[in-house]
Amino acid sequence: MEMQQQAAEDLWRRAIATGELGVWDLRFELETVHYSPQWKQRLGFPDPQAADSTHFWRCRVHPDDLDGMLAAMRAHARGEQLGYEARFRLRSNGSGYRVVHSHGRIIERGAAGRALRMVGTMVDLSASPLIPRGGLPEGPRGAMEGLPLTLPFHRLLGVDGCGDEVADGARIALERDRVLGLVGDLLHAAAAHLAGPR
Image (cartoon, rainbow, N blue to C red; front, side):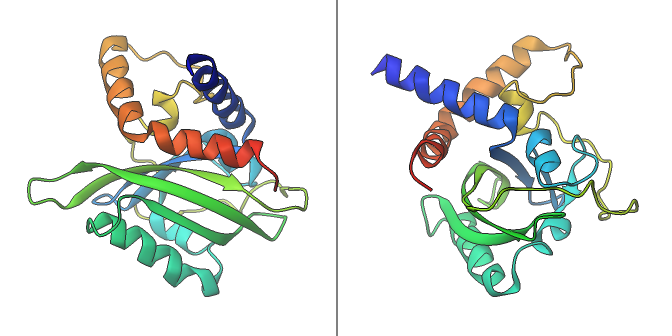
């Protein structure tokens, strides 16, 4: 059992590092989402380390899929579903729409139970190869562009690709253990999608 868990962990870490698996960290009150840099680069988007407005990404969901994706996310945020799961088409920058499967979970709520933070994974299920075209035109990508997010999910996983050292390693280790305890099953489900037939 421990060997299987280690194999799954190795698989999703490799997948995140190569951009096959995207991890995201959504902050509801800031209306920002931070994707793992390798995932953004793979899809051809600029500023891989920067957070984007949620609007920047919602605009890339196929119009026929947007309502269903948002309904699933809202149902989980309201506590009506144990987790968030959706399959939808997401427009890349250069390869058209990609079929993606996304899982997520609320990991932080406010005093009144309002969802504050949600993290998740995204797997590209498209059969055609991804050929990014080198990024979008420069310019603002939302009102929250450039604002830092404290310990985005991909940094907690140790696959951020930015190369800088964070001074408070003990604090990071505690938050990493807490978050992975809450979302480990999401990462294992993503590993199963990666390992299974497409």
